[in-house]
Image (cartoon, rainbow, N blue to C red; front, side):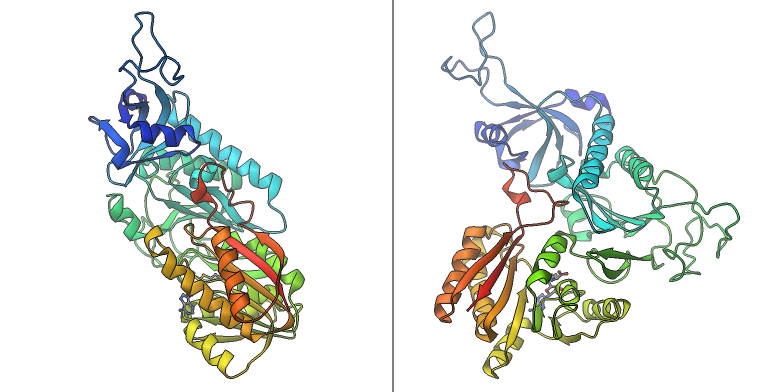
Length: 461
Ligand code: SAH
């Protein structure tokens, strides 16, 4: 955050510079030519290698000085990581001197963007890293709780956390802000070990009685599980400079999307709450849902619960028991009866298809099969197999909702794979909708990694 850090210069190769000129914001370490004395997470000025060398004057990237010597071309300001393969994340094509101010403005812009575009829910992604020009910071809102994730050295700095927490408090006045930690990510980024926990809690209103006496973070768990968001005692109001309190305590709330209610456990359960990126796809899929529905890879029941209103019977399948337990709590909250089956989706689909089971609506929303470009072909075989089995079970006029959240699998790849599955199963497929992530997970043109989620809705005859 110190403005002197802005003086540090990182020189990138022409290939790295070209990537930035094409609209991307990352430079990989292999394209960093020089980064002398740059500290972890520093704000740096990025310049292109080779600017000094005389090149063809017709090349606009080289500006001749009066002496006729080319100057280095400055590409803008960036946040630097000394650990990640993504060494440079651009934050502006201009010279940034006050990073705190820039982050404040971008948080406000991200919040305003959701106010414009997010409807029918009190759960959405407030800040999505590069997609909101705040690389390394993710914030989700679940009703009166905010869940924050920090994945870069720059965003992990205490001063930066202070800015983020104060802006979020200003914008939402949340009951609490919880930090979700992925220990693997922190290790890779060479950040100090840390547990998930509450980093800010709103003070009680006058007259409210704390269940537990004010503590200095010594793990009181009294009062968990009741009240509006089950947060019962005030913390010292330290603008969230990292003090972790009561990591064992449950912090829960309830949220809704498209009129369907969900439980949110900020620190319990698995993963990071709901898959908010599917919110608009739930609503779209529910419009077509009919008859008997099978929600494969159902997690906490997102698609299944949305289908429940329209469909005569809904079955959800997942290999994770904690996810299914949460799915059942969600079903109860909505007074729905849904059958949850714990099992391996590949085995179950094969067994069901072999047994001649039939459905009218099937959702396939598997985890990312292609974690890297190298295993794209294996991943596509996985997608094909799943789709083939689902198609075999769909009655004529049925609906297939098929998703991929692998960035490496493009929409074209998925369409080709599903087309092949249609041919093999002798079914005609008509594309009703070709969708992506909800608008609170914007994809930025020029940064293809931000367009990771694909969701096709097909009519099967
Ligand atoms: N459709 C869900 C999100 C699915 S995420 C929603 O909208 O909320 C992927 C899910 O697949 C996870 O819940 C994970 O537990 C589950 N999963 C991963 N491998 C599986 C397998 N082989 N069989 C069944 N479920 C699996």
